[in-house]
Image 1 (cartoon, rainbow, N blue to C red):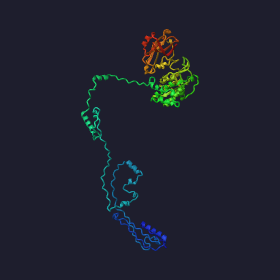
Image 2 (cartoon, rainbow, N blue to C red):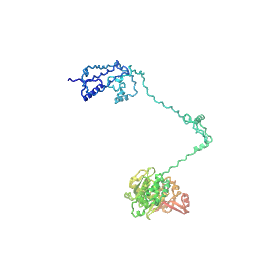
Image 3 (spheres, helix red, strand yellow):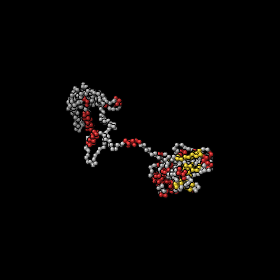
Image 4 (cartoon, one colour):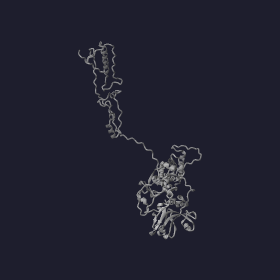
Length: 612
């Protein structure tokens, strides 16, 4: 039997029906022939323009034939499109050929100039943007086709779609910016502006002002209008100064502002000194005496300088120099807690304890070790060689004070002094070891670390300059009571201890106070004393006492060297202590000369020279 040709199907439904028949045939075996399937309906007719005839006519989809009853499936159809399954011809009308549409697509409206900058447009065209944004007249489905899409050809009416009339092309105007608020009226000068007057209302007035439309009340508006009409109020004549008063006021000289006194020498330290005396060593807690002192001595004062002074003064009241260990050469190390408990210390114990209290109080403080011109020091004699450098034997402190500067202090020497003859400690407060300048402090202290000199001039002096001092030989002797009278020991001249009688020169004896602000009534022991120079006359045959001249700060006296006395005698600066058993403070030079040789007097030595 010859092979039959496979039939061709025009619709998907026919193909599905044929497949269903094949499945039934395979399951039940061959069956009797069935009547031929009805031919599919012809495709819908098209108008000449290619559009549908009416808006209601749509292409009908052929119905799926009913499933046949169980039985043998019909034989496979032949692959012949000219004959049917039963051998009869099935008339199938040919599909109509697609005609090219003669209607031109409607004209698009003229594209207006884009307000977008060319640079941005080029960037967008070069980017991966969709074709819809570039080809707005073509659908995305028909972008790659040459014909228009079906959806664009079918319309709801047979008449061609009309586009709205083209608007006349106009240049696109830029978007208008919002207008600025109206400018406020220009302000007039102070001469043109009328003075404002306060609103006056009666005490206890209960009438509330009526609000106005501009945010002000009506009463205020009325006052403003009345003020503009009346002008400024008249100047009261009762308080107007007279011509005499004006002349008086213009002739007065302004009082100069008081000068600020920030120097340590004449600063008032009474507050920190009083606090330091309120905390004796015996009353301190045994577990944390350092912390207790740091809080109670320093917390009352915001000033770093006052904190440092309070700690410095506390040592004078509570710690004595350990002369037994010093002279017995059995010095042992003790920390701050142990030093406070014992109440005894040498120079290193003072310095270590001072540093511990200061650091607990928040101060920057260090211990400085070095050489000092204290107990056991012997000045060089004329022509004596310089000893070998030895920066050891003493300890003191450097503490940061107000203004950020470093201040050198010696709490050991400030607490008192040592008597070498009796090997005892004299509890005498010496505050000048706290308030002297770093330059003067360095004249008697030389640190092992040269950087810790902290001079105001920035210099770092060497061992020879320190040891010899400002005198070429042995320096002048200055007694400790000179500081009580505010005398700067480094200002005493002549600086050398030995004076040449037969030099034929006129010697200037002079000294000054520790600072220009220092006043005896305020910072010293009372009224200013009178200072005199004890001399012995030509060849030492006539003793005399010559008063010094002074301007309140400097004290000076010029004397011929031959009038000082004979070689071997001594010349001293003394102060008159008593006259006729009465305090001599405040006595003048004239009063002293009038009472000399007639009334009893007592004196106190301040400095001393030796005649050669």
